[in-house]
Length: 395
Image (cartoon, rainbow, N blue to C red; front, side, top):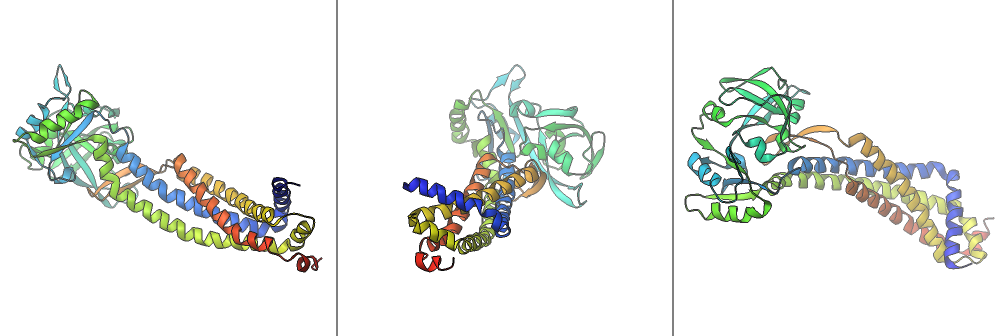
C-alpha cells in the first residue's frame, strides 16, 4: 500500500468505530457546537450594529460638522455658516434649489415597548430636501410631516422599539405635543432609529435660536467630494470639516463594534478551551479503545504517520460536525433578530438586527477546525508511539 491509501484505510476504520464511542464523541461535538454558536451569536451583534450604522452610506452624500466635533451632538453651526456650506461648489441642485439639509439633533426620552423604561431617542430637525439628499429614506406608512407644524415621522426601528410612536398618536416632548403622522424606512441604517420633524419647528421648541448642528449635502458625483471639501475647509468664514456619509457613519460605530467583538472573542476563547479538553479526552479515549487495532495495523505494515494523520482527521470530522451544527443553530436563532442598544458616541438608542454573515460563519468553522486538529494532535502522536509488541499482548 502507498502512504495515501494507508491514511484512507486507517481513517475509514476509525470513523466506523465512532458509534461504539458515541457518548464521548457526542460530548465533544456538542462542546464545539456550543463554542461556535456563542461565537457567532455574540459577533452577529457587532455585525448587525455595524451594518445599521453603515448600510447605504452613499458616496455622493457628505456631512459637514464643526471642525472640533466628533459627532453631531458636539457640533454647532449658524444659519449663515450653513448657507455658505450649501453654496459651495460640488453640491447638486434641482429646480427647487440646492440638495442640502441643515439639521438639528437633540435627545429625548421615550419608554421602551419591552420594559417601559426610558431611553434616549434621537430627535432630528430636518429641512425639506432631507429625504432626497439621503436617497434611501422612504415613507412606508402614513405621510411626511408638514412644514411649520408639530408633526413628526418615526423610523421603523424607533417605532418598533419605543412606545407611543404609532401613527395618529401624540407624544409630549418638552413643552410641546407632537403628532405621529408617518413611519419611514432608511435602508436598514441608523436613521431608522430616529424621529424627524421640521427643523424650523424644532429650533424654537428647544430654544436653539437659528442654529444647526450639521449640514447634509448631496454632491453632483462622488468625485466632487474633494473639491467640495477643499472649498468649505479653506473658507476663512468657516471652521468646519467634511466627511463622506459612509465614512462618518462607520466612525460612529467603531467603539461599540470593537468592544462587542473583543468580548465575543474572549468568551468564545474560554469556551474553546473547555471544548479543546473535551476533544482531547474523546480522542485519548478513542486511542485507548483501539490500542489493539492500531497495533495490529502497525504489525501489518502501516506506518506511524498514517496513524497520526488518521486520528487527526477523525478529530477534525467530529469538530466539523459540531461546528456546522453550531453555525446552523446560530443562524436560525440569531440572524435577523431585532434588538436595540446604546451608541456610546451619541448615547442614543440604535435599533438594529443581528447579522449572521457568511464570513462570520466561515470564521466560526475555522475555529471549530482548529479545536479539532489541536484536540487530535497529541492523542495521534500517542497512538503512533504505541509499542507494537506491548499493544499486541492486550489481544
